[in-house]
Length: 267
Image (tube, one colour):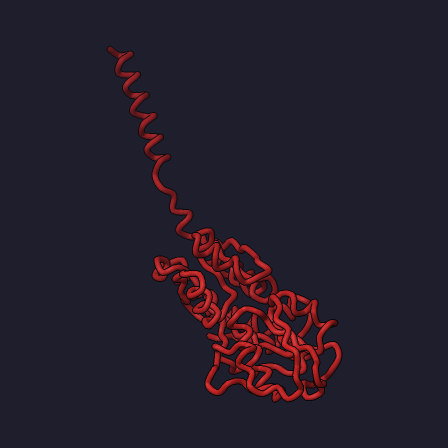
């Protein structure tokens, strides 16, 4: 009888241990997997990662060198959040791919610039010169608007952020618009007169947008970048903590001191 009781006690203890071991861990509740593009977004995210750790939030960063996979992997739940895009790009991406990713909070603004190895002002462009622009819809519209602001082309009235090369209604120097993947634009500079390039790629290449551009967007440009996630994570406490840390005075000072006006806090 004692042996039976002993066996039953051992069995009970085993099940108790297994039961305790089977309880769901809460560690996942204090961690986030965030996709960022290399360069400034990665630099800022590392500062956020450092500060978030002090608040009990562990952040894993996944770095990309293009704009497609960060959204695809977020939608497929391989990421919790991404930080790299402005809202017009996200709206177009959602429409093109039947996704429903949402913005959560603003981060920074990257003024787009016109760059050249050959001239010092857009007014120096010659007849038939090649002008390289991004080939994705929203960044191309942004680039064309910047070219219009610089005075070298005119766009269809009221076209705004829907502009494409087909909406150029006045091109007095018959500039040849070359459409390329955004990360390829810097490499194309030796082969074109000018390229209209996103600031994150410029900084990643070791250049300074304020110093090296021949024409740049006003710092009050509306093309603000956002923290983006899936709808079911909208009220997630981890993401609320992420926003709180990102919008802190420490992160604002880091951005201002590190980038000296070439990237502007949008919060």
